[in-house]
Length: 367
Image (cartoon, rainbow, N blue to C red; front, side, top):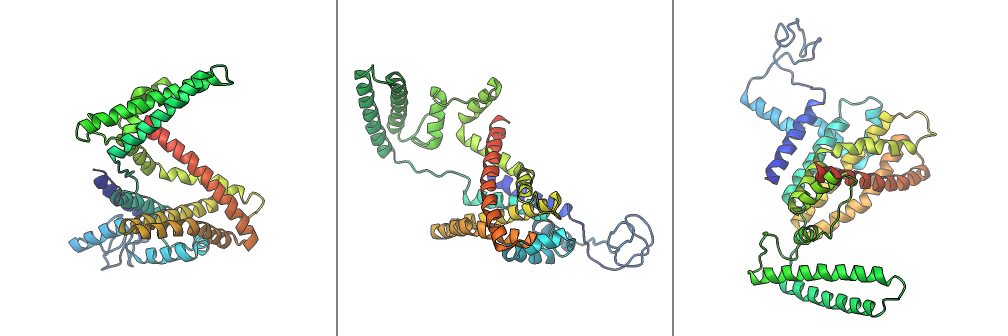
């Protein structure tokens, strides 16, 4: 179901992205009057409403329109992507200065790249934690940890007058209770042929979260009893909780744009000639580049783990380099000016991403 949803999202995103761009149409045989507004026409396009004077009605053209809607299969994408990769500053500057007909609009390519990213992630499993659990090893480790915690508890109880002893004893008691419940759950699964009664994999993070919620060891405090109850209810089914968070991340990814623009504007408070619109274009193209880098990393990792490591390295080192080049080219900065702004922008990115992820998790678990 996730794959189908992702595929539908990718197709829908392409159609939305193409819809927000000014249609170019295809010239063809001329008609005496526009088929849309009815006014006389003398060229390939109506001077009043812009509709092509030749209206295609062939199945082949319908397929062409679908392909264009999904992947923007026209000349502009092949002019936009190379510049975004190797000269992002020029691309951003040209769009700001009004030279736009040759490029895909920033918002269109951003929307498509984000939805394509989730589409790729759904097939590569990049958003799904994959933990292999050895039941025997988990039981042995849990027994060892439980014995060690019991020993520490006995030592703490032997010295009740020591500073902070009461708090230490309470903490160790809770740790013992948690380990005992975990061990009982693992042993029950072992006796049942490696299966838990709730269907979760023994020792997996999903089982850990569910057990913690049921035991009352995972307390949610959002300042509202109703919200707390919603979150705890979702956490009883950790896979569903992760799915909800992923869907929220997918739906609200555009919020990264308004969250990021003020931070970019802070870097140019004393530099005249740039507006919030200019910073917005910069942010959108930059976020698009991040999405494309993440797509490449996920795709390479799905082919071979070594490629995944290579992709992660390219992402880690390529992102600052791309930001530096885009800052320098877009705003006409010196190397030093672009360098210190890149450092601050990376820090702002960490802050923005943290705020965004917190908001997404809260919205996903309370929605």
